[in-house]
Image 1 (cartoon, rainbow, N blue to C red):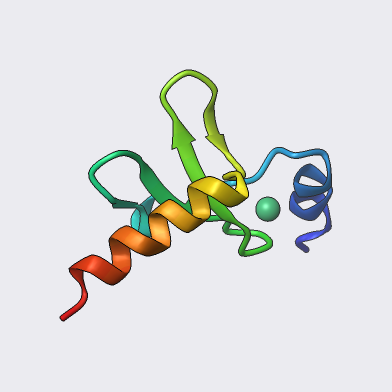
Image 2: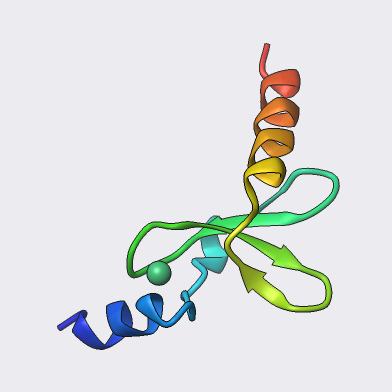
Length: 67
Ligand SMILES: [Zn+2]
């Protein structure tokens, strides 16, 4: 029953899948185990949903590494 976890997600408390976490030279990135939302580990606040700008920077770094 995932309802409890999803309720946490609605409240902004996602559950990062640490086994899937990856470092992009600046931050650790992962996804929520319950809802699949992309998460970034803020050095101060802990895991949180990234901003659009952070997502773009992350995508750019990922693209630079590919190939
Ligand atoms: Zn979630």
